[in-house]
Amino acid sequence: LKFNLFKYTKDSEEKTVALAGAKFALYADEACTQRVYVVANKDGYTYTKTTGENNVDIVSVDATVNKGNVVVNGLDDGTYYLKETKAPVGYNLQPKVISVTLYQTENNSTTTSLYQTNADKSTAGVTLVEVLNQTGSVLPSTGGIGTTIFYLVGGVLIVAAGAYFILKRKSSSMN
Image (cartoon, rainbow, N blue to C red; front, top):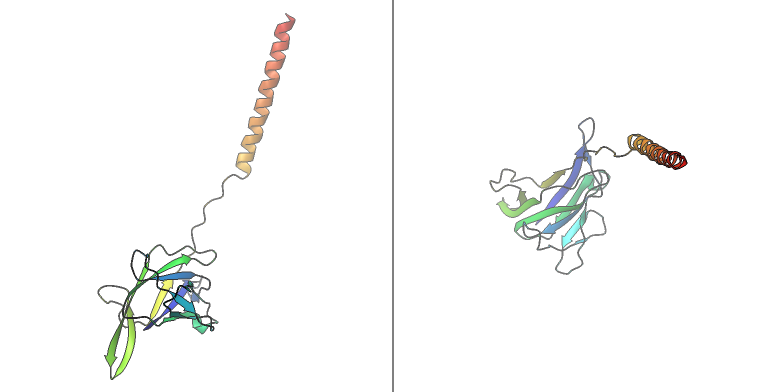
């Protein structure tokens, strides 16, 4: 069985744009402790389950490669979990693990692999796992000219206080 993975974002005109460079690890359990090993095929977008420890992360591709779809095949019936291990530059990691349940259906003697992401099979029949990614909120920069002014004023006050005490001590010793 197999599933397709499509990592994307929306541009300013709300168009779907495939994102390259995100990395995913595939697991057999929701706690993400039982890694499912995959190897990359030479085409750059197909991954196949392997029994060895020659494991690689699944890497998303842009729209110029297989329309942005990554194919993961060689899987058995069951539920798998995708965990994003690296987000594309400028984007946040997915906070949740994505569950993918694969099963076979018989339709006019053709076996098809399908997946679902919910227990109620609300997305059953969909053949593409779509993962939306958003840019992160930008934190305000700290420091800047405001703190520089405080440092300068504080330094001047310390120098002035030192000079005051020196002059006061000299004037009191002359009396």
